Image (cartoon, rainbow, N blue to C red; front, top):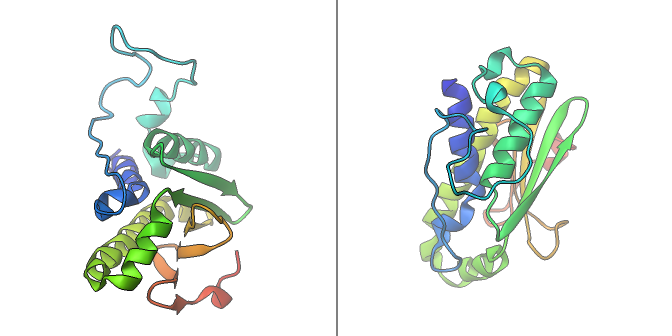
Length: 185
């Protein structure tokens, strides 16, 4: 259960990239617990018909089947993706690929070019992305799967900004790291 909570918390951190760049983008924060049932809404709240994942949320990720793990990952991503961004989840035989984007990232990259004070924030962000990728990898490797997390430009999803494979930084457009030839996914 501890690992799954860390997966969710780190997913939220990685998916909330804009928090680290408050001057350039809107910042959002999240808090809460998964100790309560996810199927019982509070009185007076608006809900939509969704699948009951409470049994899955209380299961140890190391005991999950591949299908359960993928389902739990998608649920965590769905619940933590901000309105000003998005993601695509791809499942392949030997890996998962999570491609994310955020409104304001293009503007942030332009600020980085003109103001070096953002370099420390950038390093923190790449480290957070790699940590999130590594946490996913720790459970996906039990199913012989690699994990890739990509951050792409919000206007051009083919323009890669950061890439991590199993927790290792394999591409960073700002610091000119490019190890993609070693890993082709």
